[in-house]
Image (cartoon, rainbow, N blue to C red; front, side, top):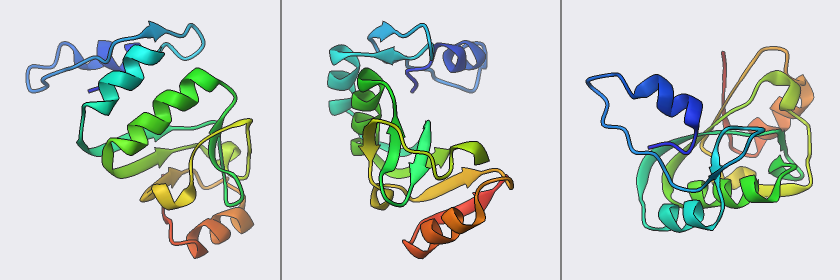
Length: 134
C-alpha cells in the first residue's frame, strides 16, 4: 500500500506484489497523494510496518515537513501503523520544519546515512530510538 506514484509505478509490474494505491490529490513536489481522501482512507487501515520519509528529524521537534497536507497524511500513516521505520539521509538529521507529524516516541527505527550529525544521533539513541546506518 502506498500513496507515492513513483513507488506504485515501480511495484505495479511485480507478480508477487498485490499493490494498493491510496486515493487523493497528487502533489507535484513529492508525487504523493495528499488530502482528505488520503487521510480518510488511512483511518480505515491497520498496517504492520510503514516506511516513512521526512524532511527533518530532531529530538526537540520530532519528524517534520514544510507542507501541511503532507504532514496530515504522514500523521495518519503513523497512526495506522504498528511499527514505523523512518528513512532520512544524514542531511535531515537535526533539521526542523514547520509542520511536525510525529514525535520521536512514535518511531521504532531510523535508517540514515553515516554523514548524519553524531551528537544528534546520540541524543536520538538516548531517547530510545533504534538507529540503523545505511
